[in-house]
Length: 603
Image (cartoon, rainbow, N blue to C red; front, side, top):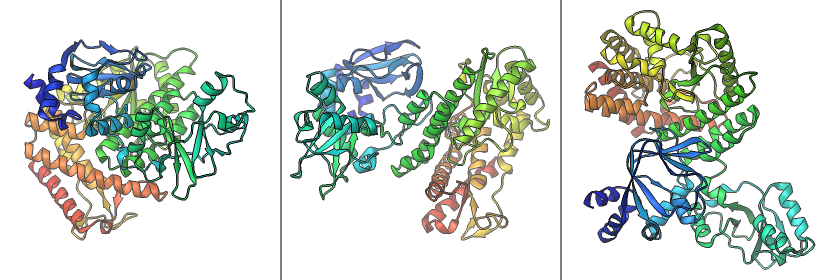
């Protein structure tokens, strides 16, 4: 009992409960064990009657067979269905041996009716579901910071009380909107929604020539434009409403937001973009969805989501784009291609994409090493890479893409190449190719593991390769020249500017890769590699901490710079103007560079 209470006390929303309340919840909780792959509840199942908290293990959330999110210990599942009384929107499946704490509905509802519990519900519904894949940070846009007016997407439909129902329905159909506001002329309003047309008109046999005043809801609940989106959502939950007119202080109707706007922040949420990608029937539709990624980045940045989290969420969207494009490409072939996996390389493989990132990729197929298979798969690679470029995601300048035959190989060919590089790391480009492929991560295909990166697990015992990777990690030097104590480029197009990627982030990424491989870790993010290196002792814990802090600081500066460029309509790059930084920020950045240089010297 004490262990359960201590566990719950460390996680929201239980961390705000008084000791007696926490003890009551802990005493009501039951352990529920699930084997790997076991379904906890199915998609579309009856409303959930228990709140579940992941105690140990992990749980995948699955929509139409696709894994959308992975929940870790301390995270909740099932509460949207439990609170709304609606069927489950997703399936939940144990990703490994898992223990959940199952809390009865009545006890859980007592927690959620408290102010902190309500705020938790609001935030979690607005963010549901969040990332994808193990290791993806579960950050989301915090709608508490957003005025509800920022969610308005369309001009409002407004009519008089004597407008025929038929005309109101025609306007809604023509504009694709689901509600029309009725101006009653005395400063108050009514509203007619698509649900009203079904239940009050069609089902009740009301004639279409009748005025909308016969079927409208009056008075309509309204909100001022500066009210927080989270407060409006709470009103919707409490009053069982789906639409909220937003009215200016002057009485002007600015627009209508609905529950979908609030629950998924439809214009920019990761979940909405991924839904749109999954439902796309053509390459053009996928490309159009992919072009929403900069908007998503801007929204998350405005909501103060951490740069490393924005990078991870952006990677989730790019993964979804890639998978759907592969599916559409494969569907056009006269016969199925050989079984294969698509590998994300570079920053996408590490889940560290930013608006300026290239898209690196490779293909591994499982079957005979023949030219016919390579030709078919290279064609798929070219189609997918071309579509991603149309969506604004450029291919790697060094041709590290699945459109290049060097990166389209059979499993056996990849194995031979990897073992060759490991046995003779001094051969041309061996260390470079190892550093590229050890970042690889499968985003689509038949192989559940990582058939390329796993080969390099033995690199931890390869002293020659580790020495070569260590040299790569210490060879990258900041540009020459100084401005206000910061290293800047002294010539060329970006003279007087600071290359935050080349001068700071790349050395950290390379150091983390070397130390991670030495610790036996292949594919992982830079921060995860630094953590593993500190635990294994391949980097002193103090050095790993310095690099992690420097990485976070530089990531924030880099993303902030690129966000400013996106807003200005410029192509994002990595060249900052040191003069634009505050005195404090320049001082912190100088210390970060010194920390990186210090670790390089130790290595």
